[in-house]
View (cartoon, helix red, strand yellow):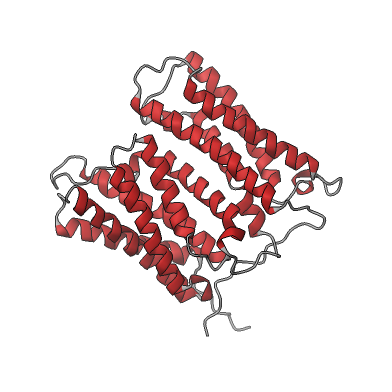
Length: 345
């Protein structure tokens, strides 16, 4: 029987405290406020042409979300901090790097104010490449991934938790996935129009958007599948988060794509229940190849029904094939075949 696709044994330092499910849930509720603020600000940058100041209602939503989340993270970390050991290990599991994330975000926020005051307000793709915005993204990633890090290293975590038990982890993963998708929004499949002619000069953008979104979604799912037997609803949570929030950035110009994201998530959940990728490497590798096949078959079916595909059959079927190959490659990188033992000389 194939060996289970278990991760390397996680080590938690002796004496390192842990917070409760409720504390992690509050962290994610406040983190959702923070991420929604980012999405609202992204919508403003993409759809309003008269942004001339740092002090906007959209920034108010974003930075108030940070203040609330940072206050909770710092209070939680301080309250549960142990005198020994020193450094980040004294904080609750997962929350040490969250404190680092708060500091990075605060530095990025101050830099963002100075940047906007001196250089001006970015529009379109420039907003995603601003160094201060990249600091904000890095800080957010450390904050939003807190419950995932904490649960990953928890030996008390069951291998097959129910949806409710794993919900803070799923929310954490979904929010980080949306954050990465936001950073690559110009290659975001669920807000791209791909029904154009094969001679459209933006054709390659459509292909790239599918390939990039495929890796973003699949990396999150495969990471979770390395650690847990995923409950039904895992993929739907992640896909729906990406579909709903990325759709908001684009002012829901393509509402059918939000529905397509949810339907694809449900289909992938059914596939993962059948495959059980935690049960062995071959099942894990099969998930790497078949999850993209399922996801993008649903996606292109939705495009066909709602807008029609202007692409040739070779192009859209070949794009799906590429997502499967990339998914298989990613699964092999995350869980490579075992290296044979070299006999002693």
